[in-house]
Image (spheres, rainbow, N blue to C red):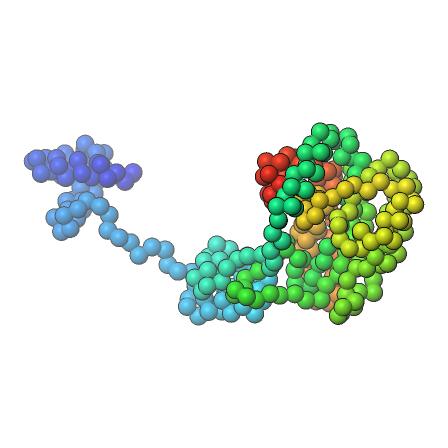
Length: 334
């Protein structure tokens, strides 16, 4: 039997005060007579027909469990709220929801944020991005299908830079053993993954122009363009890409390089391909604990990405250019 609405309760009390009997009120509002009696009793005691305040749903975690949730995320900031919800048993003897774990963490002062922020665009950067997008806005999908988009990305044992969110206090940053990957995508084309070798800890832990040429250009890019001579090569303005030796090698090989505005990772569709790779890595159980484990997991995850994904990302280039124009050269949702 449906509950009486607030207006119906007020009308029922009005009819009772006018002389109606509870039986008549029950017949009028098509409810049980006990409903009218309880409504009248509530009105006499409280002077109101509104429902009394209820205690609400019983908390599914105890204060001790709340402390455990907080401490586990302080110790392991890249642990997701969903993982905590699956592993901690609530007071109802069952796992609770991800939203519950998130609320407990926010109540304790933790914020869900990305490990690092991108650089701020200056006026010069915004103008360069806007000019680049306006110049390529008239490209159709056929022309974009002849572009090979490439990039490097670092994948860590605990996270991949900028893709997994971390529960942390303000001022803390986290990292760990990692691999530097190179990859490239185009229409019906995926090159990689190339895992850079010889990157040790310390100042030498970076991709140099020589490593870029020896491990990427010579074994992968040059053979590709020998078989696809009418394609355009895209890479960003990282130092190994712009030094004279790299530029001379590409020029001698007859490879056309697409001009690229600085600080524009949102324009490169391979950034979303890295996200797809991270999604595959997140499904690896147990999680990699060594660099060797991470190497095997990355190679397997790369093969699990649907080949059609690169085509979908390449088709987004016209929308990306339009988004830059709409943002007047600023950051876009990509």
